Image (tube, rainbow, N blue to C red; front, side):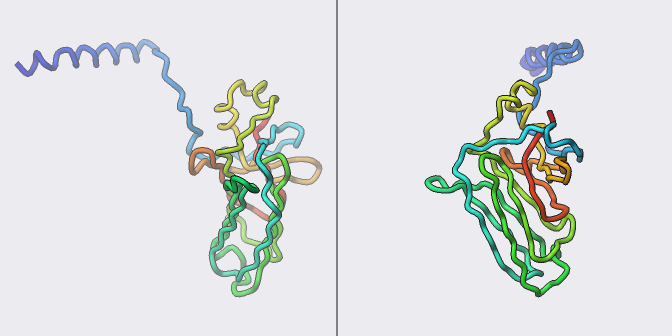
Length: 197
């Protein structure tokens, strides 16, 4: 009796397996991959920078004592005041524990990018930068020509560090949450969210 009730389910399962074995189309995940992107150095002209239409965050300067963890959050301007980016420093970030350190953050208008300066150098990998583009994600027209989809463009995004001679280093980046992109910072400098062309 139990076998007769299971028969339709077993038949459906068998058909599903045979369809999979015959090269049935597998859907592509709509979320970015969990693993970090590979680092790359490219000419700045060979990347597409993620744009934002939101009101830019104000320049921000924060002073604190090295040796304690610290996160600085930047928000878009009024009226929404939605998160734009956050910069975090671990307790080990600065070698001179107990010294006063000042962090200056200057968002770049029209794009997901900022300039970061610190009065003390920090250790590589002990600071991180997260951009939050949930509200104001704006793929440039060139991105849609190259990637043909907002989702594919988003998957290709990385946090990039501006280098001399108009080059950019796309850092290993992850998506800790949907619409967030994060990278460990090697040094102070200028950072942008971008994808290769």
